[in-house]
Image 1 (spheres, rainbow, N blue to C red):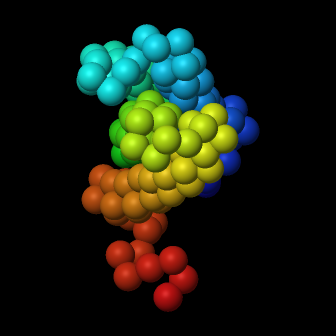
Image 2: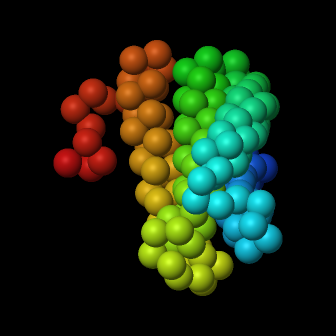
Length: 158
């Protein structure tokens, strides 16, 4: 089946982990900006806007690139291309948001070392939302727009 080949393509699977890099980058930049007093309690909104804007642009560009890649490797299946695009976009924007908010939350509200405490929170949220987006979007998009090979009563083996 062409669809299963596209979903298990090593380059597609590896490139879908880009959201992890986005979250780590946002967290590192925010932690550094807080430690050097470039971001304070009174002016963190501007920083948050800049980081979310960067995540939005990265999500659109990487989602489009990976969506096109999935589209072509699946034998021109638009449902798979759109699914990969949307899931990648949601994952990257979520990673940018949590990567930026975690250091701000731990630094300004909890008064803890954001470098130590932010990582587990970011990773958990990013993995849950990224996996949820991919699985749920894949199921529903492929059910509506995909090939008729998916049984509508199939609920993960039940």
